[in-house]
Structures are given as C-alpha cells and as structure tokens.
Image (tube, rainbow, N blue to C red):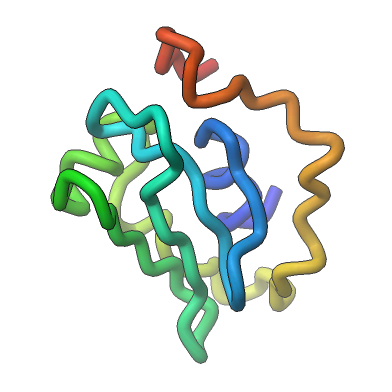
Length: 102
C-alpha cells in the first residue's frame, strides 16, 4: 500500500477537495471535515487542520503514523488524486466516536 493510501485509510469522512482531499481531523473532536491533505511536487503529504489548528505531531499521533511516512519510499510509484477509491473506503463518518486504528 502506498504511503498516501495508508494515511487516507486511517482518516474519517475522506472526500476529494480541489487538488487533494479533506477529512475529519483525528486530533480533535471534528464533526465537520477540516483536515486538508495535499501532495507536494515530490509526492510528500502535507496536512493542515483548518479548524482547531492541530499540530502535525498531534495529527500523526492520532492516526498512529510518524513523519517519515509522509514521504514516499524511493521505489514507490507516483500517486495521483484519482488513485484513491473513495467508494471502497470503509472509514466511518466524522460522527463516529471511535478513532481506533487497526
């Protein structure tokens, strides 16, 4: 699984938003998706909480990831926004109280 798919699969209520995605921020009690997820020119993941101003550290801790996982592996194929199938995502909605990660 590519690094972006791994991260997106751990978030709730993921939807496409412009050149990236938006989801519920896992670092606070988010009921209206406020986490922007975009990829830069080198395919690194950029995360920004637009509601509570959660830090990158708090966001990553909430989804059990580390900063190194925001960058692709050297042999990883390039990911585009169309590569993540939102229909197959079984992530719960923001209203779900559990932030558990399998």
